[in-house]
Image 1: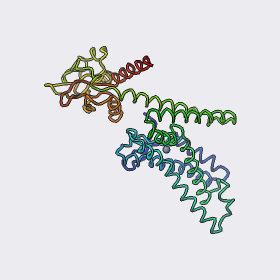
Image 2: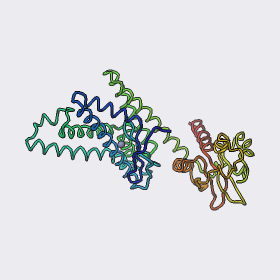
Image 3: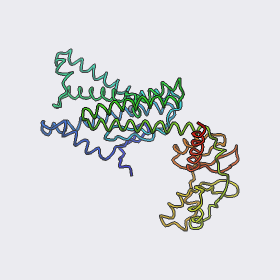
Length: 369
Ligand SMILES: [Zn+2]
């Protein structure tokens, strides 16, 4: 349960919002609207909802560009701290990552520019003094105040997201630029270094000025930077290992007609985490230790292996790298894949094998330095 509710879908992307949203809208109604009666409260709630509509449009900007590169977008979740679009994978080419990253801020730029020209028209039409409209943010319910508010929101989102620090879009834009010359791995190291430098300065300023929220954001940037560096490092190591070199070989094979009770002893005690389910030399599915546990925990000792095995699983060529295997796990949502040498099934790889291979190769690399 991730405490999110689905609002609907746009272009096949699920749009979800977190339940704490209800509180944010109440909070917005109170902080923007108090002092102006019931109308003020409704206006405050409207402003808050509109902020998140803008955030949603920003995320849709990222998503639609990603989809144009053939990347599936699972969902967009609106959280109290902002939006999050979950892409099935990251774009592989730096210029694609650049376009996906810049599409979000570009949406805010276009919105800000459109609202700005609207406001200019109002100033030139003599309805408002420039000072009145452009430099004073008031929360009195009024169309022009509303437009100015939305302008400020878009400009703030634009500037904040362009900060060159992961996980902000600016960090990805910087990495994409650097990657064109330095390669993905070194580009990430430099980009994370820049981002953490910014976070450090931000934290110093935040502590000096006593802004708790800014301290949290700085801490978040610091942690996100380290996570990004680690994930690229893991990828770098995995991209050098071939699936065919890690595959366990067919050690224990199961028949689809075995019951969970019969295989429980083996599946729960053996170091082998997943088993090919075969009949007459062909692979029908994969039974993972987790599937056995799930079956036993729900009282299905007499159910067959066929009922609890994974019917859909990635099929990997022996020459593919573990980075590809990892990606296949992520896109398929399972943790075991079948490896083939041409047409011939040679064995399974599961997440534990990948983890083990990573640790082995990574420590070896450290020893060589
Ligand atoms: Zn963004």
